[in-house]
Length: 281
Image 1 (cartoon, rainbow, N blue to C red):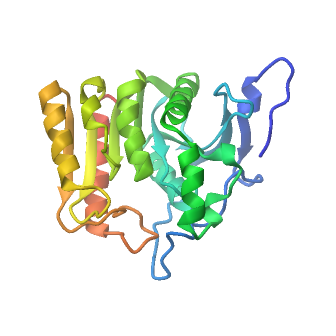
Image 2 (image 1 turned 90 degrees about the horizontal axis):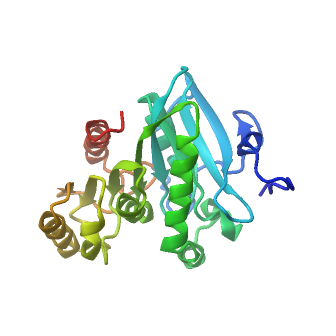
């Protein structure tokens, strides 16, 4: 992992590390622990996009690596922070960024697990993956989200008042918290993020959240969804939770057996409408 060594601190040019065709900070391919041999994942072309890898100053000894996809057209664009699953930044997450960029957003996917130095997408054993994930505590991750939104606000290609967030699985819970703790977030879309403990904090929501969940998700009880709906209503906050009756956990992940194309497409359309309808436009 590259380390910045300037004695006078991080400079703007340090934060623009690589462009398309340069050596990547991130793994190639899909997460091996989730890959299905029958999968035909979506591959979004890069034509008309600028692809970058950057380092974001976050107060840590080593800055936060991130993958960025954005429209190549000049001007300022709305932005979306993309929060990964437990597998880190691999081909699926990068493609989600490119999909958003083709819709006119600056999409940035920070590597929240970089401090471990472990190549998560290359692992096949969840017993090895989960200790790495657990090292990334909520306070640390929330700080990294705030550092990312601050970085976006300072870019000449970003609308500083139009920043949203979306995340999958582990990242879905991060979305709910970001809508509570990051004042720069205008709206969030959480894909099957765990809700345990978050309903009690519904009153902290300052940004509207769309939650997309599967009724067949064995890791997220429907009672948790009901509790969050009730808590949001009681707190007078703006949130909507959609439950797809035939969808399991991970129904948007097109490289896994859990993928449900129709539900994924419906959720993607809802994501775009939600973000654009709540100021990320």
